[in-house]
Image 1 (cartoon, rainbow, N blue to C red):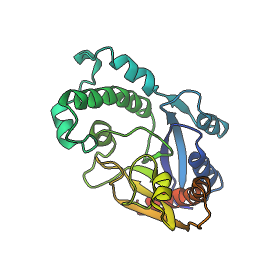
Image 2 (tube, rainbow, N blue to C red):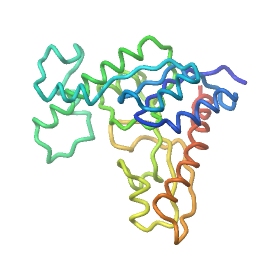
Image 3 (spheres, rainbow, N blue to C red):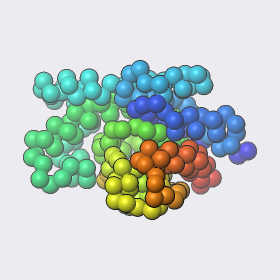
Image 4 (spheres, helix red, strand yellow):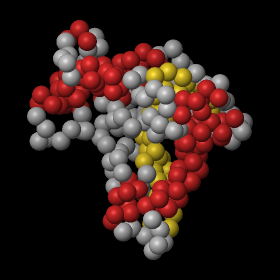
Amino acid sequence: MAKKINVGTLISGGGTNLQAIIDASLENKIDANIVFTGSDNPGVSGLERAQKADIETFVVDYSKIISSCKKGINDADLPEDFDLKEIQTKQQLVTSDTSNEQVAFFLKSRAIAEKKLLDQMSVYDMDLLVLAGFMRVLTPYFIDRINTTPGKYKIMNIHPALLPSFPGTDGYGDTFSYGCKVGGCTVHFIDYGEDTGPIIGQKAFTIEDNDTLDDIKAKGLKKEWELYPRCIQKFADSL
């Protein structure tokens, strides 16, 4: 085996993709060590999966932070290196018909939470950040502090559809609703848009006429668990 890379992981829920990556790492199927698992939700079972594998964990409670921000955000609450104008120029997540006030709140509240993530992550030597079911979009504030070398992507995500079709939060549901006969999943790098970053790998599956949405999700998850470790290994091989 080649020299192993250090992988950080972020989750929001049960962590089945995390488990697939843990298993691949422990079985030496990929050249990767998981150095931490962070979550935006306290008490989720994905944290228990990590702890069972002796992986260090932490929580940054996004819901609590955003609720606090709704009471008002002072300049002192923001990270010292936060530049609203710069981030507004870069961001591609909020549509143009959203008010400036709403955009500012979104970017400021997320930056407050993201700074807490970055502070937690800063103690680890990390080559790659893997979003293993992390359900929060990342703003340019966070992305630029991980992707520090132009053209070098270090944040990886998995999406439940064959991108560029069906970006967004419900890829399998959109695939089913559209009546597709082929579904799949995509691993891609994170950029400033929603599910728009460079594609690393994809896996497809056939959708039968009598398949339900639950059938599609089950087929998709099985493909995700195969694909994600392979894409992490592809990244490791590229170094």
